[in-house]
Length: 330
Image 1: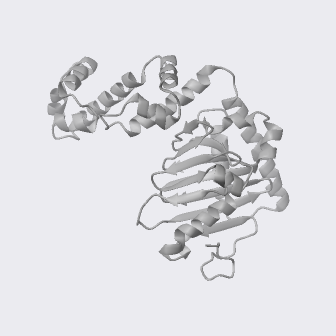
Image 2: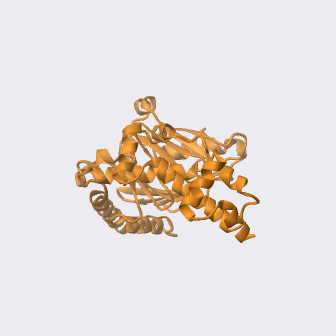
Image 3: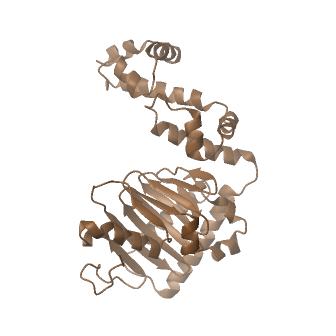
């Protein structure tokens, strides 16, 4: 299905030249996802896109602000999968670099053998010259900056190894980039051509400075920190699963089990020990706040499979039995 043009009754009102908006709500339900798929291909990267919500209505909105060499899109969408594989690369070649800011929801990005699990507030990098997979399991909002590869290569020659890498909010210039992206997509009127060009160039300089400072420093520790952080995010998201094992975590993150264990060792712990600490802390909070009817409910909710083992570990950590904390809260 082609995108409606400006004369189509389903099309949005014609926006200013440098600001473009697409909204699936202008169409009947059966046409919405096709409309969105075409919008993604036209304004982000050509890719295969599939909904993940079965028969539920799909909803999405895209607002693009053009700034000379940089396009910035504010996108909001229902759960979906966005895949650019080898066949897609051959059929629809593209050569752009993207930096995405997670505003709400969660996503999983796989590219170049790495897996990124960005949280709200994180920035993540990918490019359309190589295969990638984005998976979104819930309603999500992202702000995505798109720029030509040659623009990045001119400023950061070794940028290619940064695919599926995360810039955390506390890393150099990250908060400035996030605020700048948010301010850009909230523009109500288009800027003049000269102002757009200057802002686009300034954003590129700011972005490459942040990438250079945050992600290109030599040494193993930075990579370990990044992997440990992603693993912790995954573990917390599945804290209630008693069958969760390290092989599953490593596979989900696209690394070997040995690499995952080595990264946690560099952090002074193990993944299982850290997960147990989080489960115990959650159990203590639920009991202390009176959010459980009995200890058995907490055992199940926090991913423990052995009641006796849980009780012993809880007493060792907090000096009291779980029942004592529950009674004090009631």
